[in-house]
Length: 508
Image (tube, rainbow, N blue to C red; front, side, top):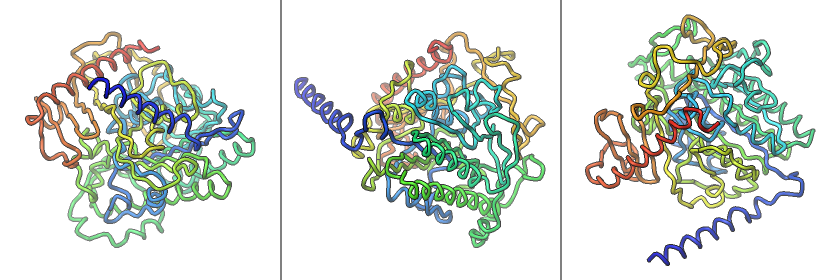
């Protein structure tokens, strides 16, 4: 039996080498002149159900639908966390955000982290960031601005933005730019790509939209597209931010959804402009174009699509399952649906694998998706971990700042008021010593078939769901599989201990 297993493993490795390193679709010319470009897009608060291709009853996303039908659609693409800042940090680093203290929105990344832009700079790429940053201030003096994180150019906001956005170009004084926000940042991204192409330099463009995060504002023509939503939606009200006061208010759900869906449609149209540019400039075949969301649909959206459990902020599927599509015609030559799990932490190791760059010498939590792009039916064997860190449990009332607080003050204004002002203040604290007392908080472990949830709705116990047959997470099967639960809990604890060691700064 052991001999058969060794033979099987050897055969699997041989196939991996054949389809990976030796795949003709990945051949590169001498000097790296055929290196692929990367265009990495992410929506803000855009959950799994809010795309046409997943059967949403109202929202229209013709461009994303076409990407899903022509490229590779991931039906189990996860955000690294159920909220925005942590997910964005995982997108940049390939690491779970708890490893460097990006626990929640407005918690920053740390300067010692190695980003996809740092890595690609060494490969000769030119990189730029456009739109929402939200892992620290974007000002030039910030040690965690896009520039400090390796990007050559940026037109960015500390947080989210609406129509006529106020953005900082390369860390300078923020300036208002008239126009629909998704189009504004896509137009800037296109100009950057044009210059990189003229200079015959491979590029990476990261576009993080401000849409469809509340509070909502949309063009009249996009609002008109959703004039006929059912009147029954207005029987409910939802809480969200007022564009007039920046404070919390309640409004009829139907009116809110009209604005939200209009923002999604405008974002989808801007993505279409970018795809058209790639085609018209002979860039499409050798550009990897990815779109995903940063967390699940928020409660203010009053879920109207597929019924999955909970929403933004939760580790149930509704909080972390997001749209995920990749186009790369040079490699993904036929439409495919990938049934494997994928997560935002996979982006850095995937880019490293494609460009043959060494991965950072520190614990990573993602893995390369390249084998699954080449073989969509190849099964992922490593689990994905999620953890909402219990901040109050780990830090004193006067924790030591990891970064000078003056450098953590944002400069780009937004509609939503917080702490009495319209700009953001970021924070990150020193964590000196790992403690077993900190191995708490809601957490989850996901495999291809099962999902373990600890301290979720069953706060004093644990839950196990068979996602293959129960995507809605309705039936807790923990009692049926006690040995599996024991094994998964052990793996979870070992992973958490590794994360706490990283949090102390041991990786640096």
